[in-house]
Image (cartoon, rainbow, N blue to C red):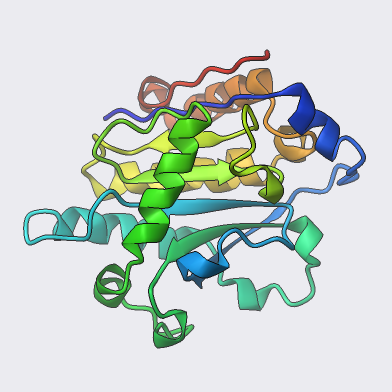
Length: 225
């Protein structure tokens, strides 16, 4: 089981968000279905994309169903956050061709996979690669940008969790648990973009709580410590 976390920081990205102050308040994680044309969401503090390299096949469907189940189980729908301002939200997007076809409260993973917007997923992978992200495996990938406007900006911050070798339900569950509890909910990791040494500590803390497997599964690097 191997995942890679790659965070790349730049002075420009840090200056861009230096004036933002989350006041020590954690971002609130959520999930949302969006079509490629609507990504990135401009009104949120940060966002992530569940990025697939290919649509499901008979050989890959069972594995991707486990990914989908972990996604639904770990993140509340964005519409349930009506009292949380967008500036305090980190939205993780499952790209779909027709978001209206996915009814909130009745999400079915088979439908989510069939409706998956492959262009959105592959575009996220391409943009992450252009920014230095480790996205060379078969995926799936969990890719995040902070702030949300940093996507496509040369040398801007990008975070990648590479789930290429994940197979079990527990491994996908752990990936989203790490994303939610150690990345999204820690304002120190997001206040001025990703901070590599803080991410390193977050990985170690997670390993202390859930065992060394996560420490071995996740790796990261950055241009600025």
